[in-house]
Image 1 (spheres, protein in one colour):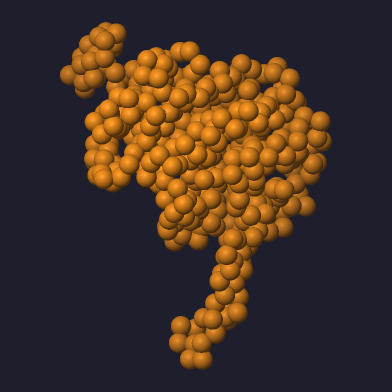
Image 2 (cartoon, helix red, strand yellow):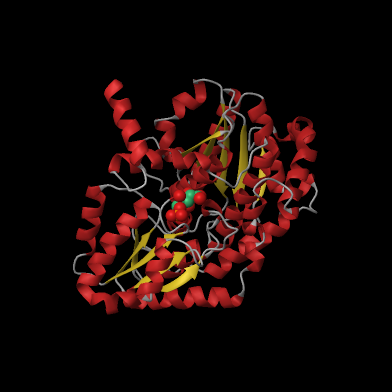
Length: 449
Ligand code: PA5
């Protein structure tokens, strides 16, 4: 199971109890509020019990749809944005390898759309699917989000052009609200297979619903192992688990104490490039949950050792406002040993006979010590290995810690009122019916400025 260590390898661990114990009670209280539903946003706590609430019947249905799409198409386009795409994308990247496994080797290639409005991206996507059989999963809880709606109109058009409306019916699956939104109406009218996003689960907490599980099933992931990992993490972080043993409560307490001391930025770091997109999922989870009422830690992410050669200087010596959380993988999936060379012309025989993983680990220890010395407190989350079970546990660990952290910070971690501001302006600028007044106000403002 995943372990949480304060100080990582930099020897700050012994200070943890002394430094963070004052926050233990607050963390325990916040954790209990998640179970009792006594905090703000209590209508969006469905994710808390999701791992245990997912029945065999639900998982059977997701797997059946996944298997159907796997044999039907060479390419499955997953359309969604924010919480309706980042989880699936992050898990797929973590489990896959950079050169193709899980990207078409044994099933269809799974690609993503609707997470931007770039014309060039969409043009390239249509080029990439040319001549290959096509299916789509469209995911939107509200069913009205502009980016995925535009992408879906284009991809649906392509599918209908090739297979007709009848053919599209078996090639399109919608994941959306049970009754509300344009996508629900469209799916019902066209007779698409649908999966429901529970009302009480917000987008960024929805990776363990069909939002994440269906694309992952299509990609060939073992979604039951993912859910098992999350279930075990739920037990490990339960409201009855004391602070000393509760990794999510300890992590939440540490980051809140550091924030109160002026550390305004948290960097999530990993030494495995496969976890790079996990950082994107994590940034949305914490950024959208905590950034409210002029408060909240700014979440950033890096992949080491790559980014030591770009961001390393700033982190070591720039403004002292950041702390670091390293997701450290204990056992890689494969083994490569550096060979000894007689001539040693590259001067590398000092690492001959060592596995790359050992060198990577020494880099991690070296960085942890250097950053601690440079005034960047660091923590370490140890992942035994990158597989479905442990990734499921990691997802739930961060969700739980985010809920606890948000309550400790005194905000509602389950809404996102600030996301609406840009939409209002964009709709006004595009002349969407209903936004005439805002459109006039923007036009006047642009003239004045
Ligand atoms: O976490 C959230 O609520 C958001 O990121 C949403 O997931 C995102 O805006 C997409 O919304 P929807 O699924 O309604 O299209």
